[in-house]
Image (cartoon, one colour):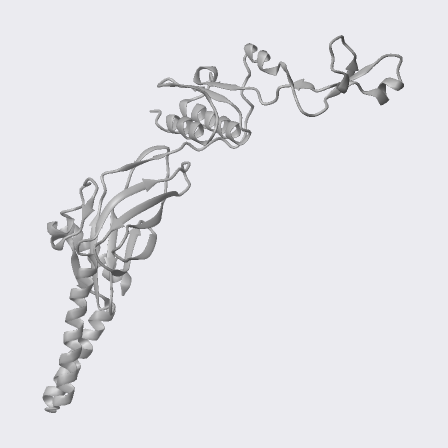
Length: 317
């Protein structure tokens, strides 16, 4: 029955222009009003209506006033539930949509912020195959988290969102479409494995010795070495003084990732390799710079720098 109703609804949307009036993208904020909220009976509502009809015929046939009164009361309650279902959506406002970060092929988290001036119960929102129920208390904004499926990198327009409710008795379904004029940026999928980036010749200066806190080795005493660094026990086994050396090669040299160095690869393969190198640099807390045909990003590290570099890769044509 549910699939039949869904097919009937889809057919009605294709055939009736009024139901597709708000299918075009529209800027935020989006406020629902009476001209864009639709109401149909649910399968349970249709069965309940048939039951009321049988009760009405029986009450009239047998002139049973009590049964007739009960039928009228149930019919009034059903009519009132239709109004309540409509008011559950009327005036609801979608104010903001915030997108997280995800690589192509993985779900991307969306946070939708709704505003309301009164209490609303059992509101549901559908995004593709993802359905979330929430309520609004009317005192403060309500954030709803949804997952958007992604296929390819780059800008991806948001699909239509369906907001609906069967509150309070489940007899009627009130729904409306939201189609925000907004796109989200999907990161490229990094390659599974590959070679590390080639360090240029000038990177040798980043491997110079620096003063550390841990003992690196023992070496012969040189004039000017602090006396506290003398290894007396080790010196006793030799005929000269030995000194504790705390200098060691600097680890994690800077990476300079350059699009032009990946010759012989197509554009998407280059993007996938650069994405893997950026992920490795971020996990190892390395300083990394990025050169792309569209822009050049200076050396940096940290989550903000990583997001900037991945966004630049995702925006490549």
